Image (cartoon, one colour):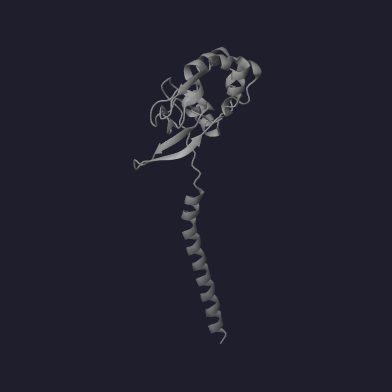
Length: 195
């Protein structure tokens, strides 16, 4: 049973690079849960604290946009996982996940993972976090010596090439038109002088 659970946990991308001993420790923390068709596993906007792996059945992911319109954005089946952001950052759920059929999920909670990380802090380095999650995680857990306990670091990255292109195209266009006009005027004036 433990080796079967280890294989299941290794399917979760976050845990895919862990050593066998670490997978064994995680498998002891993992729980199998079942949901009936139509049941909601998690709701968009609610606090999350677990990661899930689908081991049987199908789920649908529902997203409510800022206009209040709910739509299905994805379906998940055996081998798919969700909840990395909630597990590591304890951020609210990005979407609602609902069972399309009866489903069985493997879940690991934040509390259990924290206890394991206290015993094995090096395990954190082996987690295969998505880049956006890793950046947020580091910014929340890194502390400068001068930083107070209640202060957090906010990382802000702005890469808006389209905005830069849009803002630079008009000045470049005006410059080129002005340069061409000056060149034409200069050439035309020279030809009048030579006549």
